[in-house]
Image (tube, rainbow, N blue to C red; front, side, top):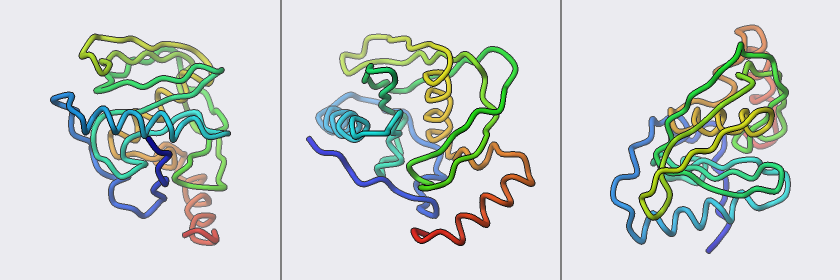
Amino acid sequence: MTARPIRVFGDPVLKTVCDPVGVIDDGIRSLVRDLVDSVELPGRAGVAAPQIGVAVRAFSYNVDGEVGYILDPVLEVSGEPVPTGEGCLSVPGLWHDTPRHPWARVTGRDLSGEQIVIEGEGLLAQALQHECDHLDGMLYLDRLPKDVRRQAMREVRESDWF
């Protein structure tokens, strides 16, 4: 299909709690193709459906050469959160240490309706948490300590894309 444009900070869909996927039909299959095409571009670790304007619980990932997707993910995490350098396609040009758990697992389903599980540490754990946040209407900026978030918001206002 097509790599779709990424919605940026200020777009209301990014602050929307997404609906479950529901019935897997041609629209959902097309969405998954677009999510995968969108995440395969260089420098992308994940793309959530709201980032391409669709408020349903689905995302794609591209970590360590493994590209995939998941529908209706349920997130589990383990370990104490540690500050981890993080950015977001929807907040271009910003990079901040964000508290993330060192291990994460998502359980959801694929296009056949079969249960799938994705789990890992490091960048994969970070991506799973980041993308699930998008499905709950959160940006990584929302997880920053108050003083860092204030500075990040200043950077957003001064950016050339906002």
